[in-house]
Image 1 (cartoon, helix red, strand yellow):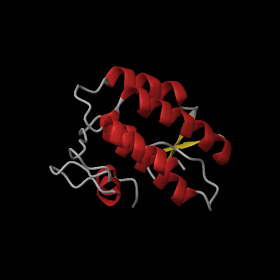
Image 2 (spheres, rainbow, N blue to C red):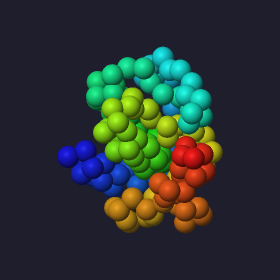
Image 3 (tube, rainbow, N blue to C red):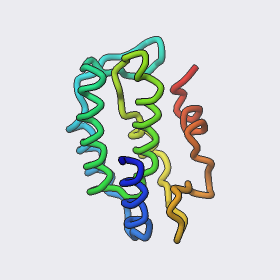
Length: 138
């Protein structure tokens, strides 16, 4: 199960010491994004591709992105993708990984010795707080 894999990988990477590689992150993100068009109603971009097909492709890309480049942001990327999948699946709207905006703003750190995906104590980066911060929902 993907969530179990995430927890396992999170435990393996939680003691990672180093600085996130921003150029590499952004470059890989752009590589896996498809052509997009503006959505004036919600103020963000949507994806033209088939939702289910793009979701599978993006999931692979996001995992590759997380596992090889940024253990600090594994929580952000996971929630960004999964919440998007949950909210748009029934409407059959295209998926879009929107965690990248958050990545450039504030790093996340794991609690030492904890495997349950806690956020940094400096800011309440819950999914609700993230949505409000990014103005994704009106």
